[in-house]
Image 1 (cartoon, rainbow, N blue to C red):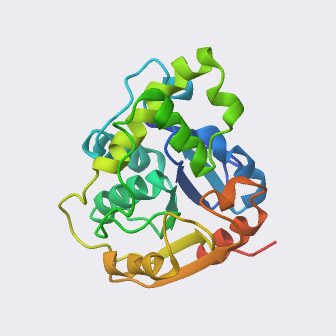
Image 2 (image 1 turned 135 degrees about the horizontal axis):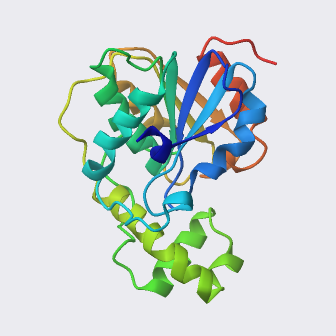
Length: 246
């Protein structure tokens, strides 16, 4: 199971593992550059959800309930040393729910790192996109900044990635916080200062989901502030995991 859900990047002997969940439409390959930036202290474990990359032939999940239990089991089976969870945008919600499951198990996460998303108990700021027609939907996704216009102008590529992308938006936009206990691990909230999806007040509301400490880190840029070289994010990850900063 862990071989399906989790892809290994970075040193296999790293003392700490970081399980990373990408944004809607993103894949585990997004985090490949992070492996070099975080080595040797952190081993990157990129989550591969159904319907993308090596799992392209599988139906993409459209609800949080389809993802949380099997992914939590995969992380638990894979994590043979201290670990943390990171998620961006949709991935932040997935990482949060998985952390809640693992938090009650024998090996809870060291920390949850959430990025580019309001906490789940706050109402959505924008109307949902997943019900839009194909052209309107793709235009809206491109406007968010994470998908190049050149990509959506290639019909063959659109036919491949559109079902998974729409499924991700369905999962994210229909998600409501699942039943479960409040976290007790510390939470780190990362955000771009110009992100239209979450503001400085809302990002601090992640404090509501844990009895542990919250730290907030802001970066230049918008919703995809972390899409460039990961050096600045790597510094924060190392600090939050109490590892030496290169």
